[in-house]
Length: 250
Image (cartoon, rainbow, N blue to C red; front, side, top):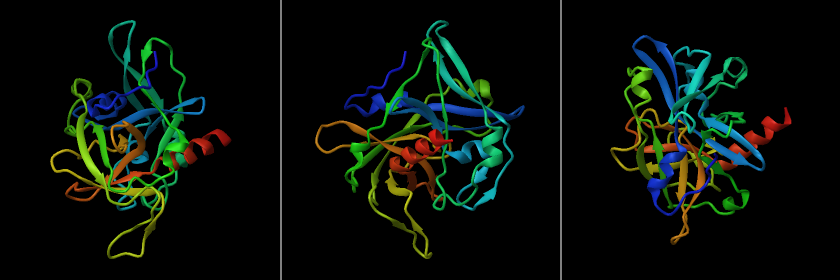
């Protein structure tokens, strides 16, 4: 059955991160992190678009060709075993906007309706949570930072690892990048602690620690990092709400 609750312990947030992967070759799998969100009455699977398209949103170029079928690891309470949710992403790959991450939202989402036997942890989004920018607030995230040469049979044995950061441009601010004239209105930036965030975190749900002991709010999805993974660009939750509304208007 769906579960959308968490408490004040950051470790309770790991259950909202799901492994998304596709087999590329006998000894290679492409992978990232996904999550399930609920907005109004609809539930969506969400991840970073570049995870499934192979498009590099930092260089705005095709990095590799991905398969048309991706798998998301979920838990089947009937069998007490891991199961897979299969996604045919052919249409999305052919029709998605391919650009820099700061020019167009780097997001894939699709509406899902799952049987009760699947235990899914769902993040409920509340628009009233975003009336402030949360500048300098701490963020927590869990992602699948694993080797790219792992087999799918090895990947499904992995668990998400944690990363901690601090917001350096608020959710209500624009981002300007040094040495360029680029103005980014769809993402915000966080400074990440060393040793946590890395490849495979793309698409991971971000949680912002509220002031005092009031718990967390959903803070968007992790996208791109610099070469040393010291900073992370995060798609604003307001942009995810817009993406949901665009999806429902189709």
